[in-house]
Image (cartoon, rainbow, N blue to C red; front, side):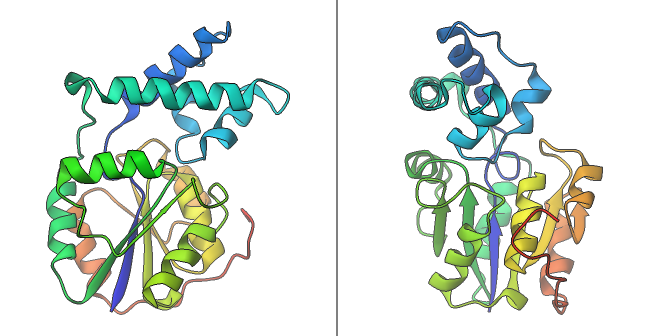
Length: 228
């Protein structure tokens, strides 16, 4: 049995437009100049509090901005015309592995439980994931806690677990937890940055997962608890 842990934003679902617009409105509501698109996307994957700490500094109105962002994102999500599109092959890949008795599926995401539920209901994924870990309950990525909790809940060890994500935070989290890190090149961080953060491999299409996930899993190198 193997455990596939997916990131959501930038890996399975393309939420960049809603993220950037929610950040823009949040900054304007606080009388601040919004960051450019690249900067906005650079913090995707972090918890809201951690993301706004990066964007405005620890002395800024971090908690107020995080609360505003959550509210504004919810308003945008309620607009059906703004539904976050799934990346090509994402829905089919999750359905295929979710039906495979040799695999268990998990999620490790900066989204809230509410955001995950909304996405799962829209995709028909509510019964496919054995474990769901969010920033509501754990320290922000790249701390390994979400992956460690997913393995504890499923009983799967690190030599049979994979983390699939699009950011350096996902790769560093995987390395800190001792699991294999698979980067995707269609997300929000550059492939060179993914490699530098410890990606064992980087894929360009979900179809490439089959060979990786069915091959014998090599023992990944351990990188400790930090970003090193």
